[in-house]
Figure 1: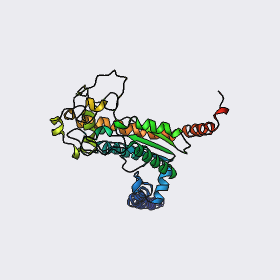
Figure 2 (figure 1 turned 135 degrees about the vertical axis):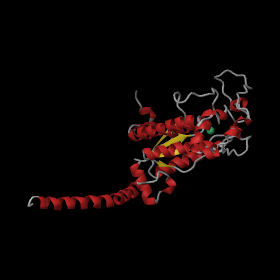
Figure 3 (figure 1 turned 45 degrees about the horizontal axis):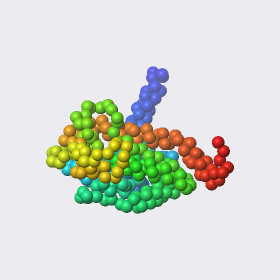
Figure 4 (figure 1 turned 60 degrees about the vertical axis):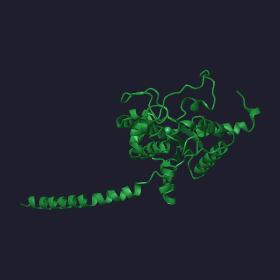
Length: 303
Ligand SMILES: [Zn+2]
């Protein structure tokens, strides 16, 4: 009896402690989540939380880049913006980064003949992008990752990155410009699939299914019209209109949610890997600074 009594007290205490922990644990967990939960959206952070976001992201910020242009007869004008933000925001949730608000001021001169296209001048595209990344950097984004959602930016963005060498910048511009894996996943039904076709329509079925009108996808032709006859390595700005005057390349009616999920999961994962690689990169800024310094007195540069 003398032995059982203290053990009964211990048992009662243990039971009380267990019940106490059981009741308070979710409350403490909630408090901790509220403290540690930080939005990845730049515009949703308070000033103080923004400071914490920059610290937590190690100065890594995403600039998802969309556009406003026709996407076949069945997808919304903002398809590239909606898709790229879906991928970037989900990636930043997995690997913390601060995500800049909606940005759609890119190169889209080739769709000016279609309703709803917003095509800024080339001067403004470059000036606005430079001031945007400069302002991001002034606020602590030492690593600006442009996640491109729009095929028409594929010359603009590398040119923008190259011209960061023209004068000193205290940050690095990184560009990630892939939206679909090269292979794998559910077999595709179409081979021509460049704009508003099987892949893009499938991804929109994941990002914003409420905006997809797949029943209209066959109402216009997305076939290549081969109206220009030049060697492959001769470039003209009218090439896209020559091939796809309806601003549609492929067949959106072949789209499936299954393909969309595969491609979107791949895209999110690819952006996560990009954020991690950029965070780990401690070479690019050092080399940039070395380059800027040397470029002030090129005659002193020796092999
Ligand atoms: Zn698009």
